[in-house]
Image (tube, rainbow, N blue to C red; front, side):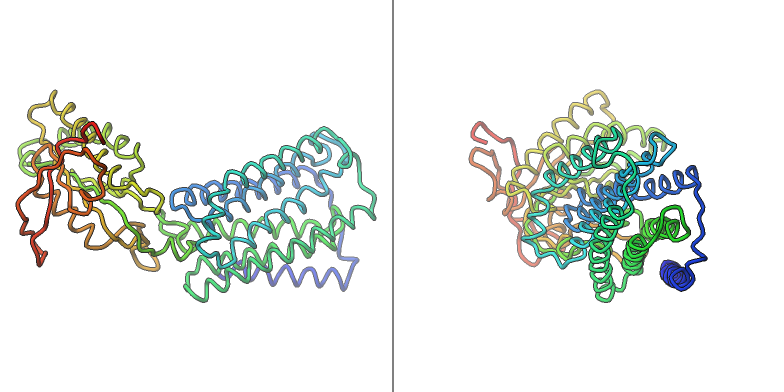
Length: 448
């Protein structure tokens, strides 16, 4: 990840050369080239914003959410800057001259906030107010678009040199501070975690700080003006290239907050698999086995997720579901049991049309788990849960009756009144030093 650093040095050298020899700052006014350059930068930025936003929602990570806002705000104002290019939709106008510096300054604010060491309470507040931040950003973009593209003052017409310089210098100074804070924050994180992706992010934000420095000095359509556009594109591309080199399932995991990387919490684990699947597969053609699995999981997987379960993995005929993975489901035990019973009812309905298909058994267990990233610093990584709670859930599933649901003692204790439970004899399970208490769930009952 050296080339963003080389770009930073080259950008500084070019700026120094133009400052020493102003005559080299030649003019080149090419509106189509500018339009496509800005559109390219906006496309990379919006792609990053979307991808990071998806990861932020999936992992409930405040840092990722702030980073996604930074990319989306930059992309939005870059798009408005491109549309306001003189000769595209409008003549010379203030929106064209100020959209990018303003948008980069807004993006820098989010980037700086993301680089701070967010405490759990602060991170939770960010996530709790996420809709407000998204709505405010959308309103800001809409208002700018309405004023700029409708040629309403103060963005109508060409700005005077003194007014333009004042705005650009002010916005540039804000941007320099914000991106410097962001670059320092991610470099600090890189020194702690030694992930190359973090170094790439830190260098990219340093490039954006340099771009804002050039904005304060550049003259429209001159070499210096083109320089900050190129630096901006390189910065976004550097982050995209760095992310592409990460494992696809957890592409942005180097950015995760410490609590996302590893945090102990209460959770409920649901395991289900098909009794007799091995013998069925032995006597059945692979195409029919696949059709059977798809017939089940095509209907059952959405059902597993509708009450807040996270389908962690499907391996052959087995499925593992996590409840309360993000610590936001205090009733996770009840959700898991309710889902397990609905799962078995739907599976029985499907199997009624296919008497030769194997049937499911399910085990549910609650307790403390470590929820976090599992895997090496590079290559395959996955965010999941580990601990004895998970192992016991798998053991309970293995002894469950066909079509039934077996739950552990902690799950049973957390269920609401009215659930119909049948206590099993103490179970001697492999790997467990003491007999295990477990129950078969026969129904939720009227009270539940």
